Length: 455
Picture 1: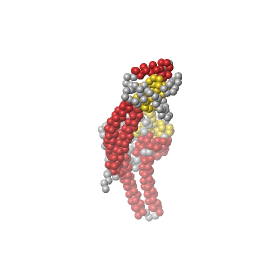
Picture 2: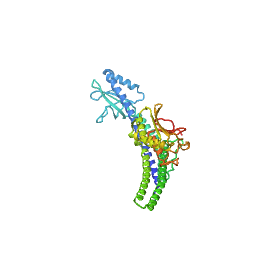
Picture 3: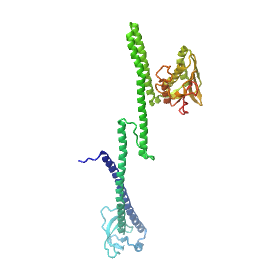
Picture 4: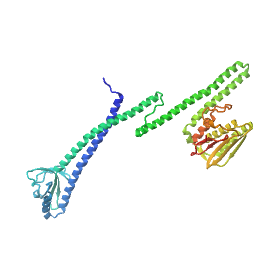
């Protein structure tokens, strides 16, 4: 038994639906046109009949018969029916022999057969009529022959048919073509999603040079896939980085525990092994906590917690926190704060960023040197600058030090996540982080509109 391909069935469904809609639209428009044309003819005739009734109602009774004959004389096409009848129904004047039978529920006008008196060879005709009572008890019968009206309506109907049949064929063809095109477009998206689900994230939809609505949708889908591919690559890279960064400390931890268990001879020896192991575990937990912190900072929902921040108090608190450690290392910590406008942000996150930069300056600056923390205002924009007396980050590494796990200085300690955390906090606030062209100064520029970071 033959079974059509699912895509063929989808094409016919799309095409049939569109064709049905277009055909229905054509029929509705044809019906509206027919009803409108028929109604216009009827309203034109009724307007003429009401004019006759109004005119004869205002005409003196003695002059009505003469006026009626003059109107009939001016009717060279013999389209009009006019007759005056007395209260008993006898004809006084006019071209209609008798009053036709009124249909039940007669309204302002009605269609009925009449018996003409001035049409040679015709004893009966069909007209739209109105019977008007006059003030002296007589009645005026006025009407319009429907032969010309019916001919005009017949021509209108023929024209509608002649125009409707090609229109229906065109609607059917357009519906099938448009349905086939829509089915191909939907099928392209379906095939793309199947390939993406199977793991091929490099697939993209074709976008024409002059895209229509579907082309613009394809462009947006491709942009979304670019972001998705980038995020997946970042996740894979982070996973690789975690595995690489944790492998060495875990190996060192296992080797240290194994060696310590072999060499320990008393309780004190075992306690020393355990202490070293706990220190290594704390270091690993710090790496995991920093990674989770970075993931949390990438969530834009943190912006809902923003509030006004007094930067003077924030910077002074960060300096106070590091001053005891600086004294222990013989480092002079200078804190220079000018009055600056308040900003909107997360105070705890900005405090963490400033504290991290101060800690880096103390860690990588010259021994017994000076670390300067300066809060100033640059064109009404607050800036926080932390500098030590060293050479700073080499120009070639400035684009790398904010990446996760990057440690340019091999003599330093840590997991290489400090500046990555600072960069994530600055990006969350929409601020800028840049390095001085020379020296070790690192600046946070607290503004939504800002120049490109210096490299």
